[in-house]
Length: 440
Image (tube, rainbow, N blue to C red; front, top):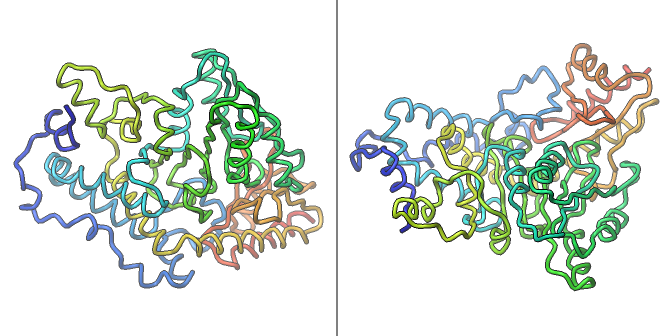
């Protein structure tokens, strides 16, 4: 017995009159997701005008938590009004269509099938769900790196604590500024043993700005598996600082799972994220939170039967009631970024990051820690100034120069910037001038 989303809502007590929503005169989701700003998106000034960020400041830390562009703000407002006005009717009559719309918009932007995408609330949630249930046989291990963020390390630690799973870390580079593609790939290859079941890595390191060559690592893992005569080593990637920056379609990366929040470089609704998995990789994990989008599991419960036990992206998607006005506005975020253009946004972000690195390199006393090679870097730029702690630099840049920056939340702390599509060249130059004055 399989139930669709509408059936699930009926079963959970939200049975309302069919057609009531249409009678209320609700606009379609596509109408709710305004395209009023699209006409101006052919210029970067037009793109920046879609955001309500304080333009008196150089906003170079927008990657921490997204500001919403106009189409996303409008979609959130539209869904909120409908939910506030006629909650049960809107939820019942529109949710199935809106959930599907999110998956279709995401799939179109990312170049994958909608049924391969699970919707979550954040990168951390996705990583926790993924690593908690990755299927390991006795004696198998998960390999990660020393450079990964707390969320990956802690998710793996909790997995080891609960199950006794073996977790091992590898160092991929010694100095981030001089990281080399071939060396990174070789270090991953050398660390893989016959017992390695999965490799858990981060696409762009928030500690240094180093971008890993995911495609090359995936290819090397395949060769290593063949050499060892072992089954496929799964590659899972925390993509949060590459997602919305890098232009590759997900299948081109070569990984098996990709996890990201949508409220950073994509500038999607706050409190949204995805887990993407190859169709043949989803059976390698198991659901943790009961799903409301997986009709097979709910149908089996209604019928008093056991579910099949197979995992799909729908089954992996956490159920319950969410901040639906944000969740459903995710479709508008993907459409907005499609209007801006993936390749165009990537080129713009890289150009601004390169300009920033070049400017900082000329500042006496400043050391850029992020590689200059665009093949090994994305939008994040990390540096340090010998004469001042990064925390003080962030405070002084804001108070004295109106530049918003951040500090890397690691044992080794750097000053960190994230130029993106919301920024101008003037923002970048302002940051360089501020660092130069403070470094004297």
